[in-house]
Structure formats: C-alpha cells, structure tokens
Amino acid sequence: MVMRFTGQATGTEPTQQEIASVLKSYFTLDEVTNQLSYLRHRPPDKEEALAFFDAPRLSLRINLNGASHQNSLARAGYFIEAIEEGLAAIRKHAQAVLGTKPSDEEISRSLMSNFILSELKNQIVYARRHPRRPA
Image 1 (spheres, rainbow, N blue to C red):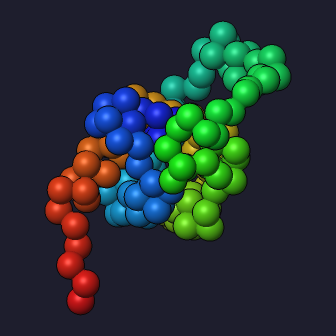
Image 2 (cartoon, rainbow, N blue to C red; image 1 turned 180 degrees about the vertical axis):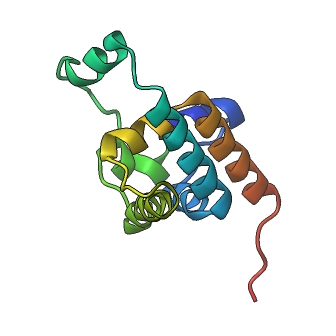
Image 3 (tube, one colour; image 1 turned 45 degrees about the vertical axis):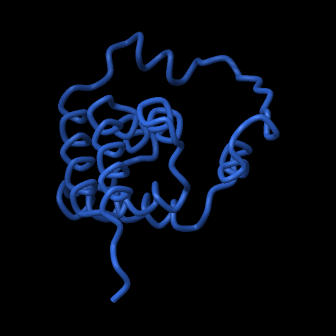
C-alpha cells in the first residue's frame, strides 16, 4: 500500500529499502504508536470489522513484466528483512509506550490510515531530496 500510494503521489515507487528506512525512523515509530493509541480508543465500527475479517479471498494477477523491476519481489509478496525489522521496531516501541504489544491487525490498520501513509510518503520524498552522505 505504501508503494502504491507513494508511486501515485510522486510518480516513482519507493524501493523496499526506502520503505524500511522510514519504518525505522523515530518519527514513524512515534506517529504509528500515536495512531495505535487512537485506534485502541476508537474501536472499528461493526462494518469495518466485518469487512476486515470477512473479505473474500482475493485473486490477483501480478504483472511482473509491465511494472518497475525494482519491486517485483514485493509485488509477489516477498519482502526484504529490513521491512520486518521496521515492523518489529514499531511493535517494540508501541509496547514500550502503550504497555501492551500491538497485534498485527492493529499495526496493519494504523499503517493503512491516510495520515500515516501521507507521512511515510513525505519522509521518502525528503530522503530522496536530501540523501545522507556517507560518514
């Protein structure tokens, strides 16, 4: 979802490494934790909850030739280890701040919020414009 949103907004899909970098940033950890707290206080309405669990099994045809080759593995469902490290950092930070470990569903819901998607995109754009210099 982050790849598609950022690609549509900027014209260039982010690489998995770019996504992993922003997932691990302190700003993202803090904002996603705030979103998790908000979502815990505002449980999903009945329709949203049912849609999440009762969604029909999706059947996708993935066009690996027609798209950018840098993300073909992600389109097929294979992600680099750094993405998992970013999600683990979110889980660890949220547990430290909120007192309980967030579920995969909670993390997923918070990462799909428009605000978080926009913030991730903004961080990716900033990193592209201001690359870090090697030390």
